[in-house]
Length: 122
Image (cartoon, rainbow, N blue to C red):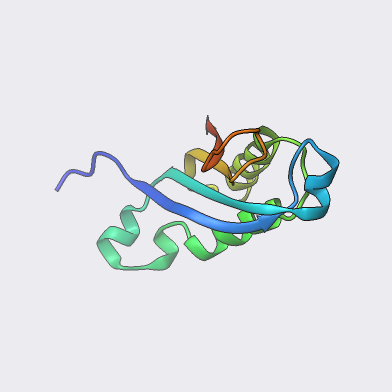
């Protein structure tokens, strides 16, 4: 077997947070989703069924949760902090793509979500 690509994805993690450019958003808050894809070497996990050979999904989720608790005006800033935290906290991750979405954003028209996606590599 030749392994050509390994991607770990956490899709649509949900958080209630207080991000936004408008002062009212800091008071009322809103629902957000975060999706993350990480390129990492998980060969040891594939071959040995060992959690130490991959990235721990629960620990990644905790890092994201902590970043979502820090208020920011912009989704771009939140995504940047999440990406930086993942690369700093998980040496096995070679690149990460983060999408932060604000559910039902106050944009003056019906909108299911506003999103920002950031891809970074080491």
